[in-house]
Length: 182
Length: 360
Image 1 (tube, rainbow over the protein chains, first blue to last red):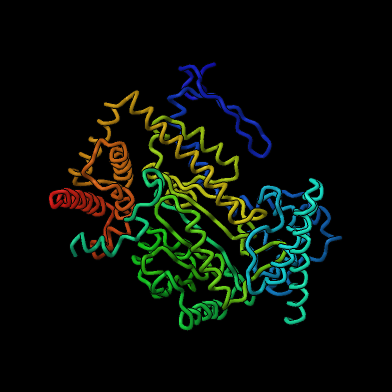
Image 2 (image 1 turned 135 degrees about the vertical axis):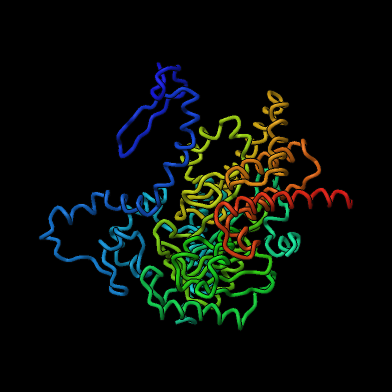
């Protein structure tokens, strides 16, 4: 195979680009690949901002195309009651207006988050200590419960008993915290 | 002002100190995005709200202090000179977006410039910790400490399911961006980088040039950072990034060894030619300077040059940027004048090196 750039040297590098599901095969000799090398790594990125990509992602989702297909049935445009941002506005700028938008657009958001975050759509990290006290405890309890199940499956009953006690303690703490806090 | 004094003022700790693996890793950075529940996000908020956000943070600074980080200063974007802002951008302490498009923005800076907290950029608060060498864990600990300190006084926008709520859905969850800046000349010279970058992308990491999104890999310096912010814990995200980075470190080391074995004299020649250019040229552009600095740094790391200190690359890569040159010159310069100034600054910096050797 001959290099498609210079049509002289034999092609040494072969790769497949897939853009929006469209496949293109590229065959280059080493020299041309080197010349184009920078382009392949960087120029592709420089024109591309995360924002554009995001808007593309959102619009691409079938769930969002429904309203445009039947504009008359979908007379109501989703709007955040707190900051008045509408869903079409969000699609355009790719940024939310306020923290309440997450609640307002939650139905539309789930598939988007999954796509943006490698299939994930729930938080698994840090929890603010002060405002998240209850959440923090509940999360700990959930984690303990799953390790309790595991130790029962593995017939480690002594370990299971300690975990059970820990869960009870945390549940007490959670209940006490709620009474005290509210 | 003498260059030495200018350097003392201009150089942040991550540029001058050495950290673990600093032959390849220049710096490690952690950024946490946070928002306040009571105000609209910066995309939509009013001038009044923006001011209140700044006031809340100012209030915290006045009443409570953050141990271990020294004095923290608040700088408002609208009170800064364009050149000052540019210098902070070049030092990676604030983002171009904060400098250019955030009229109500501000930044909290720690004395050693390890910590910078951007206010009213894309999110209300962005905590950033920048450490020399490979110190992601340390940077994360520091960022968490600052986060806890702020959270004691502020009502964060947090959701049980989605985590920390951010202006852009790409940051929601942990709000964490962990990134590592690496010098990878070996992988470039052996042309392995073109293979490696797509592989890293597939693992959910982004590879960029030294000045962030869309910037070129000036001086063979790359930034590698996580893409996903939701679903994994902060520690796991950092650990995953560490995994990729240590792979890259060992690949880079073996590339350097391979180069030494197969083309020792060519490499030595390249290094000393670049040293020659840096120490003798009278006009030099950013790109050429970056290339030569990368070569010289490689030469230092591989033992060809032993009388120049290692941090010269980190330092001069930043100090030869347009903003810094103009600050050193004390006023605006045209591009052609900058190239002359840049060459002069580099020559002078190398002369300082040889003087230091003489004194020792």
